[in-house]
Structure formats: C-alpha cells, structure tokens
Amino acid sequence: MSLWIAGVTRGHNGGVCLLKDGEVVFSIEEERLSRKKYDGGPLAAMIKILDYTDKLDYLVIAHTQPLEDAGKIDFTGDDVYTGLARKLGLIERNINEREHPQVVDLSYVHHKLHAACAFYRSGFENATAVIVDGAGSFIPMNMGGEQVMTWELESFFTCEYPANFKTIYKHQGSRGPHLGARMIVPSEREGEEGEHELVIDDTGGIVKAYEAVTQYCGWAPIEAGKTMGLAPYGKPNENIPPIYDDAGGDTWRTSNRNLIIPTFPNGALVAETRFKELNTKEDEYSQDLTTLSSRRDLAYAVQQESQQEVLNLILDAVERTGNKNVVLSGGYGLNCVANYWYLDTLKEHGINLYVEPVSSDAGTAMGAAMIMHYNLTRDTETRSFGESLYMGLPVSYTEGDVEEVVGKYDGELSDATVKDVVELMRKKNIVAMFQGQSEAGPRALGNRSLMFDPTFEDGKDWVNRIKRREYFRPFAGSILHEHANDWFDMKTLEESPHMMYAMDCREGVAEKIPSIIHVDGTCRIQTVKEHQNENYYAVIKEFYEQTGVPIIFNTSFNLGGEPLVETLDDAVRTLYDSDIEYLYLPEHGKLITVKN
Image 1 (cartoon, rainbow, N blue to C red):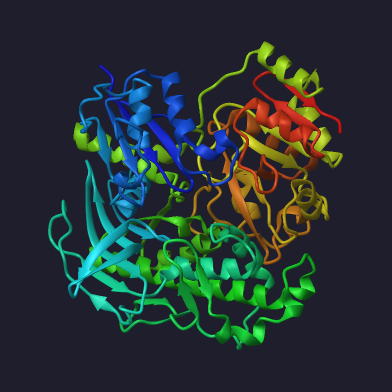
Image 2 (image 1 turned 135 degrees about the horizontal axis):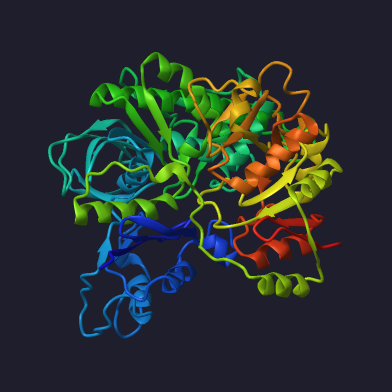
C-alpha cells in the first residue's frame, strides 16, 4: 500500500509537495495557479492533490508561525489547511474530534526544513547545512522574566540519514531596545539532543541588511534579485559606512545596528540619517544610469559585504562540525553571484558545496514532506532528489486541448521543427518553449522558457522591454554541457544544471554573445545534457549547428511582475498580452503564433 505525504508551506512562496512512497509526484508554488507573485496560503495547490490521490496518510504543514495562528473554519474550529483537507476527503472527516492525527505541524522548525530540503536533494550521505534567511520561525524566548519574540536569521545543522538534523548554531534577531548586545546562550531545544550555541540580539542579520538596501533602492524586500542585478553597476564608495560590523567574536559579524534597522518579520530599513549624503532628490529611481549612483553603490556594497559574511559562516560551520560536505539554503542561497564567488576559497579548504535551487520558502514544503517520509520509513538509502527540477503538475495536453486554447486567443497552429524554431530566433524573434512539468524554483530550465538569439548586441534591452523589466536586469544562457568549460570559467563545477552560479566568461566570449553577458562579464548559465532535457538540448544543438554558438539566450516564460507560466492557457495568454508571437510545443511538433 502506498504512503502518501503532502508537505504544505503557508507563507510567501507558499506551495505543496506531494510524495508517493518518497518520490515527488509534484511540487508547485501557489503563485503558479493563482497568478499572484509570491502568493501564500496554498489552497489551490492543495486541491490539486485530488488529481493524484483521494487520501493522504499525512499532511505536514510548515510555516514560520504556529498553525494555531492560521484562520479557523467555522463550527469545527479547524485551521484552514486541516479543514480544507478534511472537506476534500484527504484526511478523516470526524468533525467531533479536535485532534487530527494525520496532521503534523512543523511551523516551529523553519530553518530545519530548509536544511532537510537541501540535504535530501544533495546526494550527500551526510552534510553540514548552512541556512541564511530573512526571518524564519517565530520563536518566543523568556529573557530575564520578559517574553521576547525572536526570529531565525542564520543556522548550522549536521545532517544524517534517515532524519537526523542536529542544531549546532543559531542566530536569532529580536526587536530592541531590550536587546542591545550579543548574547550567547547554550541551550537544548525540544526534540534535539545535546546543546547548541544560540545568539540573540537586536540586529537584522545578513539577509535583513540585503532587504534594507533592496527597499532603499525602491523595491519590495522580497525582490532582492533586482539588487543583485544592479550591484555590478556600482563601485566602492567611501561615504558608505560598513553594512556589517564586528559583534564581538573573531569571525562572527552581523548587520550594523546603526545603519540597518530591522522591521521584523518583514523587511528592514536603511537609517537615512546615517546615509544623508547619498539620499538626494536628484537620485530618485529612474531608468537613467546617471541618476542611480547612490543606489548602485549601496547595492554593490551590500553584495560584496554579504557574500563575505556568508563565506565566513560556511567556513565557521565546517570548522565546528568537521564535515566538509556543505548544503546551503534559505533565501540567500538564490544569490548566484555569491555562490560562484565562494568556489575558489571552498576549493582551498576541500569543501564540497551543494546550493539548493529551491532555497526560497517553497523548498520547505519539500523539506517537510521528505523529513516526514524518512522519519516514518527510517530509510537510509542516499538518493539525490536534485537531479531534476521538473516537478510541476504532471499534466499532458491532447491535440484537441491545444486547438481549443489556440482558438480562444485567436492564434494560429502550424507544424514546426527545431530548425524552424532556430530560424525564427535568428530573425530576432523571441520563441517561447512549453513542455512537460514546469520547473520548481525561480529559474526557467527549458520547460517554461523564452528563447532568443544571444548574438544580438541590443538583445538584453530588446527582451527587457518586451518582458517589461528594468534595464539593468541580466539574462541567463543555456549551453550544451560539452562546450561549457570552453566558454566559461567553471572553476570547480562539473556542471550547472540548475542555473545557480553567475560565471565569468572566457576571453573573447562577451563579444560573441553580448545579449547575455552582464556588465561585470558574467552570465548565469544552465548546462544541458541530452538526457536532462532532450527537446531543449535539440534546440540548442540546432542553434549551434546553424551559428557555431553552443548557447542560447534563456529567460523565464513570464512578463515582469508575473509568476512563471504553469498551464498552456497561461502560456498562450502571455503571448496574447505581449509582443511575444511564437510558442513552440516540442511534444506535438507544433508552433503557436499569436499576432498583436
């Protein structure tokens, strides 16, 4: 009899991961279904469970706040997630019981779930997990007789099969002014053996400082990827005070409390009184490079300083645990510039790094489901769940389905080969690619991608305009694996299938593919082997045969501010609402054209 487990994460980037006997059936974020970026409360995603099973053995619910704080269902008093599962028949329907033994609340171990997702997907037999996050679980602490709320910022764990995760170090932030200094509290958390070092202070930690700069630049705190893209346009600026400062230890540093004001749990602020000389009216955000000097320089500073602090954490974690297999997750794990920058130093120390591609909170749904599976089965087999990220809803479309959607948006349907697709790209057309299950995480990897010819000098500006994105946002490239090391400095990497590293290009490469080389000479690349994505590989290979360039311009199939497309209807509607005209369906050998 099969074991069905659903992991649910409730907050921003909310989503569901459904496991059958330990294998992922699907993992999807709510935003892909609701079409609202970063959406929480994954009720639509929970309903999709019914497409694959009508019963769950366990529903594992994760968040940063206790499940009891979620909204309640009238009359029964169930939280909304337990109530929905009960109403759908996925768990027992006995409304006279307040306890649901099939429901497990893991809302208080947010960082551990990040660690579990990364560890089980890494392929390591054991590892040290380093979690660098904005604000994880809400943890009330009794300090001097006063109840104080704290939030997880950075954590270290040791990870072993089947489900052994031991906390080694944890930094928790809180609101002042009652906490004005570093506090080291050896303690034992419920459910864990031994002790770990606990640091509680009133700083924002590494990620909150990055969020503060992101807000200063004019964006929402969760849009830190924009700050990362802007950073290379900046330069060292002596007027910027240190963003991180010494907290009293040899290597342990945190955000400068005189410059960065955390606003837990969401975001942080730059103390503009300390930054007055850079906060001028002439420097308001605009598309003009000449009016962004302070924001560019501040973005540069926070990128440079934060990646150094995370590297220090990794080295400290390895020294504490003695384990040189490192998995990195939490929101900062998506910083592909930093991930590449670590590699030289980690090589010197003999450290093996796995960066979790689903480092956002969406990954905690996978972590919750997987840790439950291994706790129940006590399975000790080492498996790498990270080989593929194609984990969206496993839906296939018939010829009739395709024709119906094309008709809905007044499109045209024609036969097409990879040769036809590449010829369109070479004529400066964006061609969308839609096939199979969508990608988990924020990166498009050939199943929900927009493809373009990277050799056009103005290609970045062209595609940014069509996607309605800021001018400084970089683009990625998908390259045939066998050519990757000739075009990019791969450092210690054998491959980069999940697009988690912004790599330096080799000499002479930038002028060949100017559309996807950022201002700092880097490109976030995806290496593609034929067995990883046969249809996508075929397009890149055809492009190589026609041009001698083994890489194509790849960006996510969405418009600015929208989630990645999930369904065929989403895909064709995006064409209808934009200047993108072509959509390739390789599984059908068809091309959809929508003229505007």
